[in-house]
Amino acid sequence: MRIEMTSEPGDPRHPNEDYASAALPSSGQGGALVVLDGVTPPQEDTGCLHGVPWFTARLGGSLLELSASRRDLTLAECLESAISRTAAAHCATCDLSHKRTPQSTVVAARWDEERVEHLVLSDSALLMEHLDGTVEALRDPRLGQLPAHVTALRDRVRALPGGSPERAAARDEYVRAVEALRNSPDGTGFYTAAADPAVASRTVTGSAPRADVRALLALTDGAARWSEVFGLGDWAGLLRLVREKGTGSLVGQVRKAERDDPEGSAHPRGKAHDDASAVLAVFR
Image (cartoon, rainbow, N blue to C red):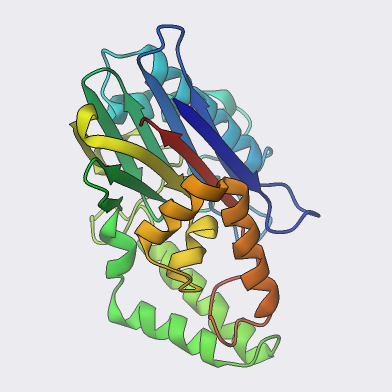
């Protein structure tokens, strides 16, 4: 079995808010992988003394350990427990009810001799290559279903000149609109893993026979830009690139595309450079 991973900050002057890891138990037949993308708060005030990198490391490490060792739990139950553990680690010092409390997207996968299980939450992605060569993108669709007024605000931000006061004001309005939809109690928005373990019930989960799976590739949206933002190829082309040239090559190509369009004029995006992480697991 081949496992390969790359995780790189969008700006080397700032900590990487992604988490990427994998585990191969000593039995040799099973394993697990976890990829998280921390949500960058628009302001320093999050009610937390620790910050997003601390949170993703805690949550990701706990989720990986549970996924690999607790085969009696579903992946959703593993996430529920990992969120509870992480919240317990800082509830005495931090305001976990703050709307900008540290939070992240989640991708997790686990396999044994019989099945390959997956869990996805928010806008990170898991690509599954089947035995016939087809590539299936396992996604959480809810971020792609934002209300029309929110997408209109996003488009307005992208249309305004970079660095202008008008763009800054429009971006603040857009951020507030998105925050109102994140983890909304009425179920009309989208979800991230924060301090409430109940969000585990909102995840997208499933499984496939291991005999039908050739490879898995977990991506944060910073790495998925290769397809989704820069249009360098489809999902099958992305996975083929990583199989042939490695996860580092994928991130390197994304960085080049970002540098070639620093203002986002050709390829609009929320930030010029984003943390980018990819974990590849090849079964055959």
